[in-house]
Amino acid sequence: MMRFREQTTETAGFYNTVGSMMTSGFLSIPARHDVARRVDCSSLRGSSVEHRIDEDEACEVAGTCRGLARKAYKL
Image (tube, rainbow, N blue to C red; front, side, top):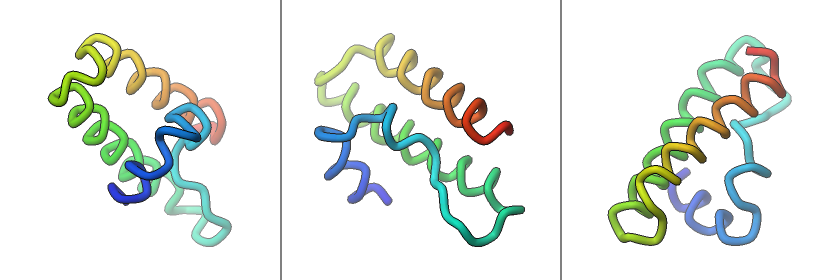
């Protein structure tokens, strides 16, 4: 998942890849979104450590992504 995040963030960004949507396992959607959120936060942490983005900006993006996933899938 980290490799996917690293390869797609530059073109798709975080906002266009909200959560982890699959057609199977409707009941596991919250768990998949939790894992996707953790991967997103890890990626943002890495970007912050490498000084590509500020820590405040990383927190803002993480909060926005979490809100978008909750809104999109009514979690």
